[in-house]
Length: 403
Image 1 (cartoon, rainbow, N blue to C red):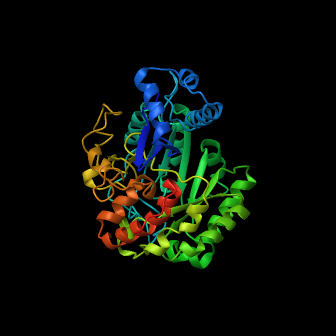
Image 2 (tube, rainbow, N blue to C red; image 1 turned 60 degrees about the vertical axis):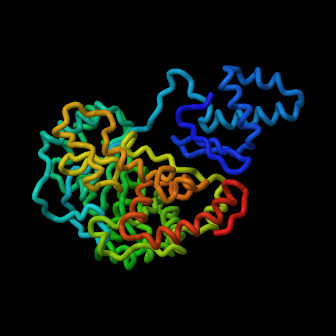
Image 3 (cartoon, helix red, strand yellow; image 1 turned 120 degrees about the vertical axis):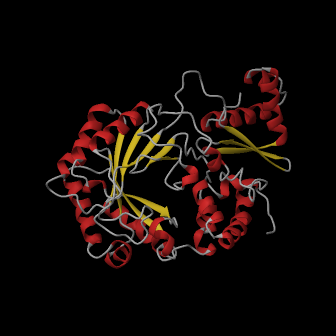
């Protein structure tokens, strides 16, 4: 009955049935859960379970629970249903025309290495064989490559999925916008601010206005699949509401990214204090709090500018490297032993979190757990833990807890 993605959480006389693929869940009593276990154990149908119930009210309740389980994917998937939503982030260059303060890859104007077009095509062919739904071209700044349009044309010819571009938005102009919107499904632009002053603090002078002009240019050409992203650090957190309003006015999709203390971010001093990192009011007001549904290394991969393969953009240290796409002719490959290092940071596996009944809701991204727990942020980790636990217990289990 239960799908392979189902995980059962237990607390007192309550159970949560959780779909680890999409983060959706339902809370039931232990008695109701035991009935579904009986159905699975005895090989019964759900209708047989209903027939065994004497009370019509009980039957209606069980129907509603079962329908919800189907809706969120707790009940076993039907035969032939396609699973997975594979995404590859491909860092096609480490070069960039900007020098942003928080750059997680430490991009520079010039680098000692850049993958040749022939090697890049080889990598793309192996990526395409993995059958991802989306390939995202990242950097650095992808548009600094002179062969970027050849890359896009090749993808258009060989790949049937979505192609997106992560860019700083300053190199899109009248001369190249037509080619870009022809071959791209989405353009993701980092802006890191709500005006010239806040943007220039990270990205440099004049960048904000260039990005706004780029958005208007794309709209004039009939292209509207645009996201604008902003880093969430202790300096920008208070601007989030204004950032969302700005995106609404521009007709773009807002994305707030967690600060990562890697690359130049190590020296930026941008870590949030615990009372800024999570605000309980928005979380409590959300109709559904989703759990960790991370598929890093399984359905998501990052390939850096040298061809090294990592589970995602957070786990880019040597210990997490899964091989090199130019050297491994067998790509796609089975998940190797280095993935075990990543799984250690899934909240249900992490030593400090493994026994907590709300762990999988507290840290929806294992990469953030890694950054806050192991990179000299022990104090912040403990503060966040106490701060989160109090309202998550109430929201998830409908219980009060002292912390």
